[in-house]
Length: 168
Image (cartoon, rainbow, N blue to C red; front, side, top):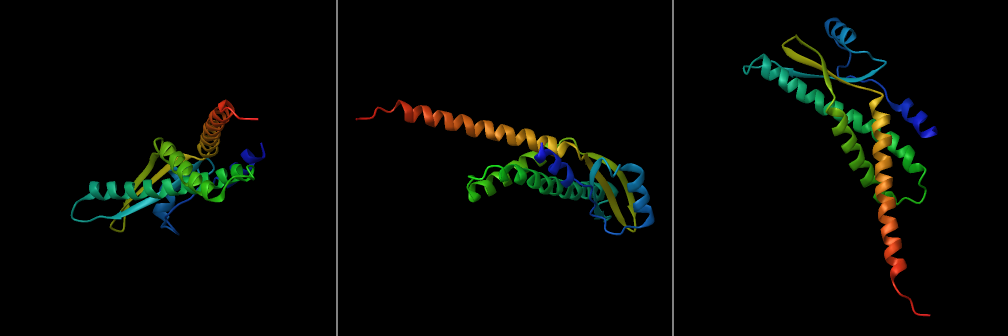
């Protein structure tokens, strides 16, 4: 229960649009619920390729930034779970942490929503978001599945070792 409470504290909204113009701030405020959504804003310069290509580039940048933010948050949550396993090898836990957080982020990103799109000062902007509450829930279920896998492997090893005849 403590881990769940701690994980909820970590999850916060974000944006890659530092400062931002009044237009940008209004677009974000009207499309994103900052108390429920984790969001980022991707941007791309509008070039000769056209507006749609710039929008695609802005969306791609936003997806990558949002995935990175989800990974950061899920890593914080999983670290609280790993702290409960005092015997866990640090090198192993770092690899597990990276793999699980990437898996969680990929999974959550399938539900990412484009909340807003606008053009300003020769750039295309896309606001992309996911629900904050998905991160601790998915982190917990993924970590529990991971532990179930470890326990099954340990059980198999124990049975194999137990079946080896010993001489007295």
